Length: 175
Image (cartoon, one colour):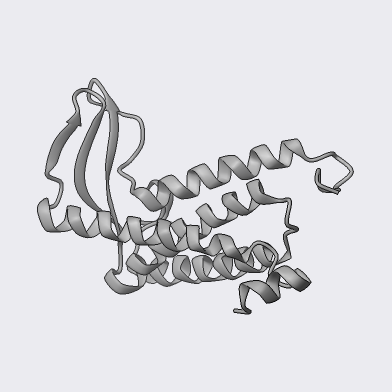
C-alpha cells in the first residue's frame, strides 16, 4: 500500500485508510469468538440480559440464518469464495471513493471486517462461531450471530442510508 503522504498527494488511495476499521472489526470478532469457545460448551446458554440476551456457543456451517447448513460441506468453499470475491470488490470500492465519502467508506469497512472475520472461521474451522442470542420470553428474534454479523448488518444499513442520501442522478452528494 502506498505511503499516506503519497495517497494524500495524488488521491490514488481513495478511502483505504478505513481498512484499519475493517481490521479492528475482524480482530474484535475473532477475539470474542475465541473467548466464547474457550469458556462455553456447545449450546450452553448464559443469561446476559435477563429475558432478552443470552451468550451461547453455536457452530454454523451455512450462511445467514443457517442457509444450506445441512449439506455435505461444499457450501463451506462456496461461501468462502463469495466472501473472498466480495472482499476484493469492497477494497477496490474503498480505493475509488473520494475524500468526502466518509460515511460510505465506514459502511464498506464494516462489511469488509465482518466478512473477513467469518471467512477466517469458515476456512480454518469449517464453520462460523456464533454466540449472541436475542430473544423475548423464549421466542427467538434471530438465530445466534456474532460480532462479524453485527458489523455486516450495520454496514449494510449505512450503505442503504447512503444510497437514499444520494441524488437519483447517480452523482455523489459530495460533487
